[in-house]
Image (cartoon, rainbow, N blue to C red):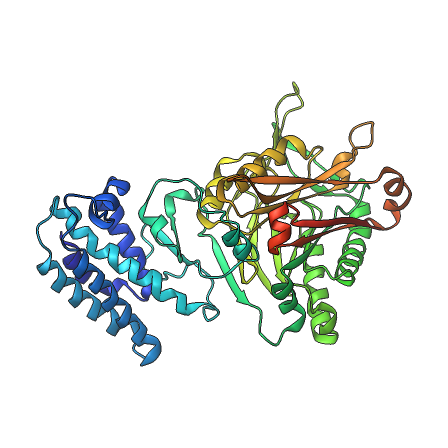
Length: 509
């Protein structure tokens, strides 16, 4: 069936412009088996070619007309019902005007492609205005989810001036839509809900947080929490284990978490990250209450804070879940661990994490001027494949990793460097818990890793900075208070050029 006819038949299923994007993209994926060849023969052109698509001029005019119709929603208050009906009529008209060129089905497929290109330009007007969490296609979700990709990031200016360029990838339809993210349902984990993207902008009169955008400097606090024995990992059946919080954690955990949270805020941290497992559901609730009360009674104390990543909790229904809170205590979303920890090397001492709904919920926070922030929990990084695919699609500015690991080397260093080298933008930070390092007989200094983009010659690589503990200080002071590491990031041109995005890393007790 020709696109215009199928568009007309499905028009009632399309509630907004993003439903239309999903419909057009699905049509193209069904119709086009070789996307690179389609783009090369039907969309792109070269003056040296003996023949190019003779329909490109009218298709480009069609794109402009579609864009003008969509702008009427904002200018004249049209509802989308009016817009989509007019776009259907335009599609029918241009379908009858297309000259015969190569394959008739692929020639017809250029119509939905140019609708997508029109929307890709139109959505730039939504910067700072879109308040709804993604996915933004609300009614038509047959095969894809649609998100905006229009916010600026801290690295963007320096990356442009230093000519970071784009990673080497095949030309695909999705790649042409730079202002939209298209996620195919079959790219998600089984039984996973669609990734939720929450957007917010920093108001112009918010001087404390605007300073981050002005200076391009961001302070990230990671909280390793402590060396005390806090957790048990009982085997429930076979090799399947759950997580139990011991009496020390139940008595002192909330008090320590709130004290360290308060101290990180006093140190002017913009983002605060706790480790895996440590933030039980009770602690997560108390962190939220603390932020809400501070916002009500003394909001100025939070004037530089953006976000708190409340580590992860082992939940009553056997899941490993991180919660992200905005500075005012608003819950932005949850991140469920997707990859089970497993240790099957020791005979009769094998262990596999008993996750009942792995990867059920996923959250990305997109702050205009800061960039997209993703969270991955420990083994989600170590197992590479799925996370690398998601970072390839969404290209986050930051990847925060709450972890519980006896070593930060095997599971994180190369994996984070690989992500950064592949997408040229992601800064990864592992926040590991000190208790996880206490199993051995010797003191382990390495308790975290931070990876940032650095252009070496013509190649963008992931540059690593190891987070080191101090044995004398840790032995003397940890049991009393725990500690905080502050990582000061600077995304100005000079520091990015020199590979010194992390200007300073300091431990506080």
